[in-house]
Length: 242
Image 1 (cartoon, rainbow, N blue to C red):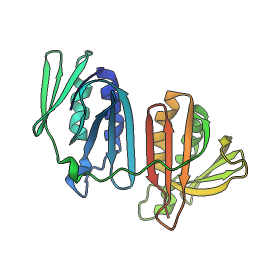
Image 2 (cartoon, rainbow, N blue to C red; image 1 turned 120 degrees about the vertical axis):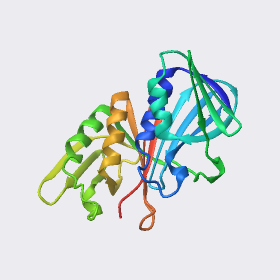
Image 3 (cartoon, rainbow, N blue to C red; image 1 turned 90 degrees about the horizontal axis):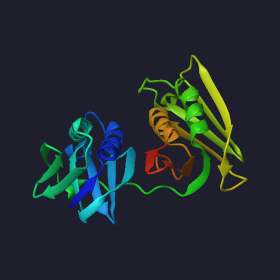
Image 4 (cartoon, rainbow, N blue to C red; image 1 turned 90 degrees about the vertical axis):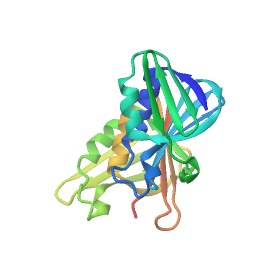
């Protein structure tokens, strides 16, 4: 794997992906970000079995491939690089990063040990990114932070026709917001409980990109439901709360 990329694009992609990585991963590879180069694009991915984040960045690639490195270490390095093109290459068991006079070598982790990232569920509809981010910000603040009551840490999303409603409570306060959206099925009627922190962080980022957010929901048996949020060059998938 070998490619050249703009410093700001790389730093932004790595920072956003690394932000969702667990502080105390159950296995070491979950602390890593997966870098995959194919067809002139770099995909930066992170996954902890609950939430996955992916960003796609245009690059000038000389060789395709994939590698896995520490997410937070890579984020610190890319943030400190000078404003010049960055050359990245996987050499043996290391990743070499060169930007101007700066040069770094990072140890890699075995890609084969990294879990398969979940697929984005089928689209349910689209909503204005700015309006969605504002609504989530107003509602998510009321969600509980007490992990012993996991259901209270979520935001309930209700999809009824062209109305998207969000509700959150910590038992002492309650927040409710309704906005218009464009469902793929005009007769849709779905409810889901989404982790508030994941929803807030993703909506805030996608709202800054502008345009529209694609909302995707897949509900199966208990524990198998997934939500997907995509906008611009980014996407997040997360398990629904039971």
